[in-house]
Amino acid sequence: MRIINSHRSFAILLLFCLGLGLFFSGQAKVAAVPREDYESLETFTNILAIVRKNYVDEVNTKELMTGAINGMLNSMDPHSGYLTPELYKELQMDTQGRFGGLGIEITVRNGILTVVSPIEDTPAFRAGIKAGDQILKIDDEFTKDMNLMQAVKKMRGLKGSKLNLSIKREGVPDLLNFSIVRDTIRVQSVRSRVLEEGYAYIRLAQFQERSDRDLQKAIEKLSSEKGGVKGLVLDLRNNPGGLLTQAVRVADLVLDSGMIVYTEGRLENQKQKYFARKEGSWTEFPIVVLVNGGSASASEIVAGALQDHKRAVILGTKTFGKGSVQTILPLDDNSALRLTTARYFTPKGRSIQATGIVPD
Image (cartoon, rainbow, N blue to C red; front, side, top):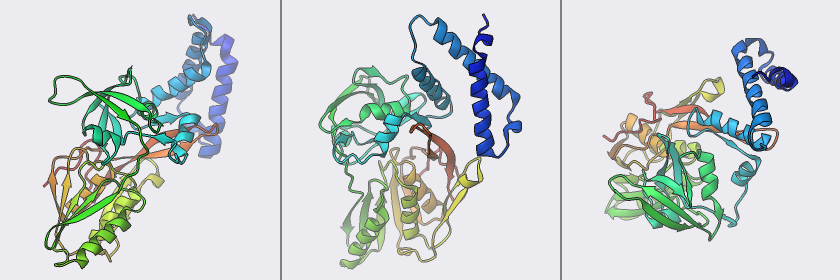
């Protein structure tokens, strides 16, 4: 059955719009687009027309297009996704206590929704959720066909509302069921104490906007106490990451020079190098960094940089391996793409993605 002819105007219009977009954004690069790309797009519009005309129930074209976009992005990697206008607005807005969460960082690993790490002193942490837990159901809905953005949306909700998770945990034969009450997530990024005279312990729970300043204040306070600081234990266990800029600034506090991290992507503006300044504040005393499978992203950047520069001994277990960069690309209809555009590498060129940081 051929329906292309009866719907050719729709296909031609879509192809024409694609051509205009490539022309204006790529400065007359339309000619470089392979012919098979246009042929594939024509096949897509033909299938869309067939579905709209012949499917057993009346279909919503907008929902079909959203599903097609999600399918395209999900086929690449679990961290890329489509943000509908509603979800994009929700992620941008200041919650002001109206929306709550569980306090977990999640990803999709081997097709299964997986906990990167629970964040300390949050509902998920207090309920007993652990790094590596596989989330099989959210409330009564199986997660098998959910993408990351859909799962995040499902977990967000009004402060005080309840959510049920069905968890598969390594080494536990039966499913674990958790009933968790959403709350506003406020994280105390830095906590510190003296282990014994001269030796400091600092817990960094997440890389937030003020983490570098809070860390510096903690070290200064500990340095002013009896014995000063002769050595530091920096605890990054179950730290799911956060801001790249903060990872760079935290590493910069204890490095006197050299590269901290670099990113590589297909485009030139996705290739970035980040260096330590030569006046790092705390470059003398020895450091031990604690990591585990819940240490991800920004935590891995710091651990990898200090390990490559032999500035610290890394102890614990292999980190999560979340070393990709996601960029939010707004669209004209107030929706957006969350697209993986680059990957992180340690100063010695080790990829963090999937491999993680292996302790010393």
